[in-house]
Length: 67
Image 1 (cartoon, one colour):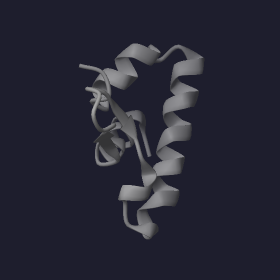
Image 2 (cartoon, helix red, strand yellow; image 1 turned 90 degrees about the vertical axis):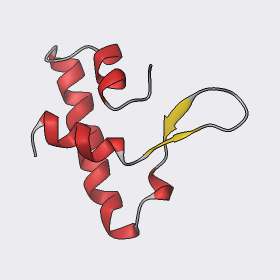
Image 3 (spheres, rainbow, N blue to C red; image 1 turned 45 degrees about the vertical axis):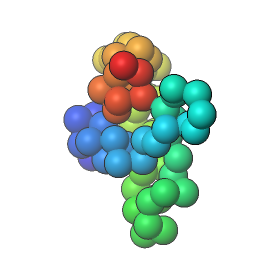
């Protein structure tokens, strides 16, 4: 899985926090069989941020956590 594929997969795990206008990643909204794949996608995102391929803010924007 590459970074773009990881981002597309993680978009499906983003949800609104509730009363406040924020979003977050929630793996519990995914079917059980997709959770381990999303955990791998999170690891790929984290490694990409640490290696400088993408900034944290850009990653969060691309998965649609930040506006």
